[in-house]
Image (cartoon, rainbow, N blue to C red):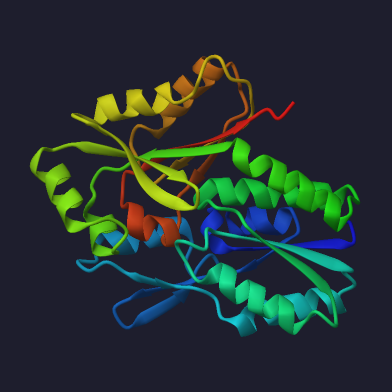
Length: 281
């Protein structure tokens, strides 16, 4: 265990067990169903969230951690012996989480150095960066070394996903109503990309199977990948899709995770996504 502490939020779609295993401190977002609020990861895991979603007619609301919650985590890690902290958050274009972490870092500046990095991503791309930071910290790398490596990785990551519906993104204000209506009327299966911190439309496919084939085609056969992750939201094709990813990449070790409340609220059930990390050297 190194002297650099690693903190992230709960939008990276890592389970509580995975976070604990890698000594990553999570400062969770919150999700509210009607009048009931849950602390993500801690009080509501991914499978429980999807059960609630099946019986909820309204879209739940998500909220960022407070400055005080980040500050408490930073202070506790300092008191526990950490000499510095790297904190990786989801894109500041999609949530106020990054701003909360930055403000908290300033509040504890006299106690401990906290380096807050906007991952520019959501879901497993953010989770991967937290895992990589934890790996480097466990190997006693310094804060500047970890920062440099994470910043080098970010432009070499691509995230794509196919959604079963645009309805959640429309309700959550992440896309315009006109785009959602057009996709619905024409029965398109949208493919999105997370790029430069934003969720962008990447393609529209006529059927679910064509959307999944298109998603696979984003794995370039001319590229070399160091890590690949699959994110799924109760998608029935997950097992067969992962096998096709293995066949296409010749990589047996594909990281698979269930999309949790923060991303799942907006992406919706049956979403299936890819996180691709290209080899840097």
